[in-house]
Amino acid sequence: MEEPHRYALRLDWTGGRQGPTLKYDSYSREYRVEIEGKPALTGSADAPFRGDPALINPEDMLLAALSSCHMLSYLALCARARIVVSAYIDDASGTMSEKAPHRMGFTEVILRPRVTVAAGTDLAKASALHEKAHEICFIANSVNFPVRHEAEIVVG
Image (cartoon, rainbow, N blue to C red):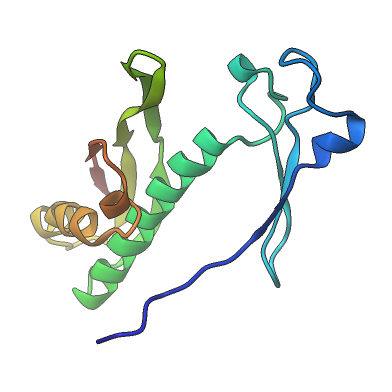
């Protein structure tokens, strides 16, 4: 059996330096994520949850994780299939709402990658690899809501 892949980080609620959680309306939601050997991230809650809208939030990071995992899976499949990709841009979006009373969560994510491939590429094959990328994306396999893709393949 293959060893599991393990990941670690340190999360520091830096907002605590501005004061404790005395009232819901007034404490800082700012935090810092540190992963050994990588640049630190400073984040907050999303603005509707009294966070700093100028900082990334967990919802942003989940959407980014889904989009980037799909892209990396797709590029790997293309490289193995000898499909030459020269550009990849994804305009991803996610919807979050109440699934049950007092229970918020993502209800779907839509990935909209625009992939530029070399002239002479089998466009049907390039398009079909998005399904395979979705099947092997570790992050998409870890969530309990639909992740759809509406890919566009262009020759450039």
